[in-house]
Image 1: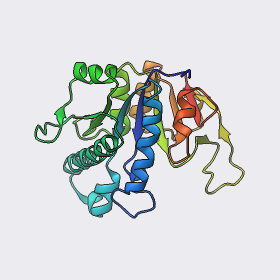
Image 2: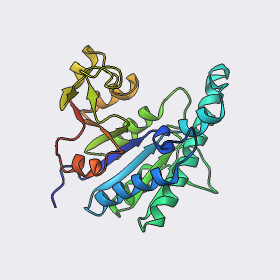
Image 3: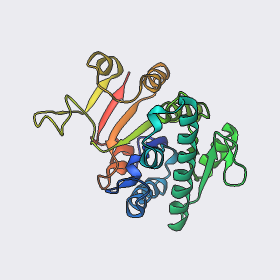
Image 4: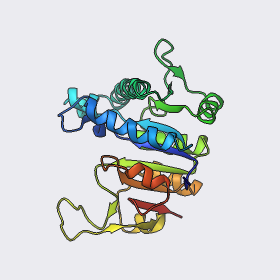
Length: 237
């Protein structure tokens, strides 16, 4: 079975792990996600994952906005580590080898991120889960995903969302909104389409790192994306 992308970076938001819950991790949802990843990994695709932490941090702290930004960001990074460990456990429960690499040093629970080791794991067919964002405050996990995709030499960055692509307007509010099958970086900027945060988008554009925005909850969507089918929206140079 042919694939279009040999090495991918999958960006999962923390909120995507909640399923229908108000906060935290929904086991059924996370198992559905890891099965999709296992399906493409078994096809020979090398998978790196960056996960957010909004399901934990925003869910338990309504005071985040009034906190010192750097402190809040470090708390958010620790939430991503919790999510990464949950993903690793889920992968291993279905027989897929996974490793967590943290941008913050937490030797007892995760390896500290090193690029050569991460690349080695990918080449060995292990799923690598990058936790703690970039390790620095003031940067989002979107930016961390763009950075890791560039460092790992990925063929594409996949942004998993609750919507199956980039639309002309919010499809939940505007029933006439239509999905873009493909769109250029310049068009997305000019139309002010919020694909991801500005820093992450700029890094992908500079590196000519294509982005596919798709709905992770849609059954078989990830497989269709890596095979190059019309799934989600391809953002390109």
